[in-house]
Length: 298
Image 1 (spheres, rainbow, N blue to C red):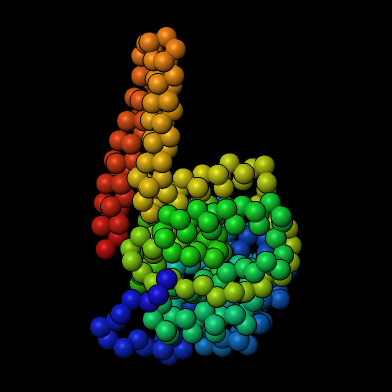
Image 2: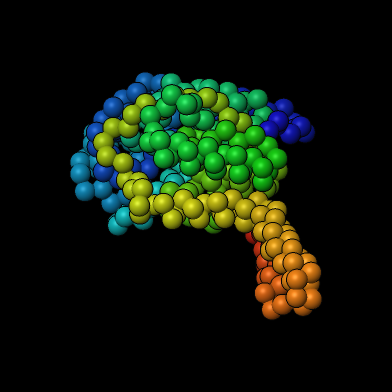
């Protein structure tokens, strides 16, 4: 998406204060590698590690590196950690990245450069050579295509957690963000819905350090719900209308079949027509609710 015209000149991102927010739950190994690199790459940045009730040495390690620590009393989730970090940050620009070593500090200047061009958010899009399970790669590709269709903008990585964003614009949507892993989907669709400019830069994500917190069976249904969240966040009617038309087409086809064969209008045809109308009305109401949500964000 191209950046919108600005009434005043953009202040270079490198001259703005930067806060780096890192959600962490039992990421001692990854942080031991990441934090020294961050201090060297972005020495003036505020580094905030949100300790999401870790049971390993994450907290002790952070104290030795002198970073700002926000600690949750119990495991509240990745999205909740992002929100806690955003509230605690003082920078004009927020940089979000994972603690597992998949996001490289060397890519931060590239993200900041995009903000300097006038974009409101810059996202690191994982390339095909990045280290991720095949099932996750297929799912991410499907989400990207679906979201691109919904927004009519090319979305290269809907679920990437590595991004730089204007702090005050990000905070407009804090109340919409979930406490789980799908915060990148929510904030991306929220920015597109609000008309903010989003850019993507290609990044390589190496194999993570430590054990992943995502489980295929446990999180499979949750990822399926992301599909519906994409639609309901951006334009519910664009998702519900094709479903409604599908039921209407089935009802019409079945009615024509029964009329030609037994010369009757059956209960099944009526049920399909009624279902079609109900789905359309649900989409219409959802569209109005979504509009009110984004009105409140301003």
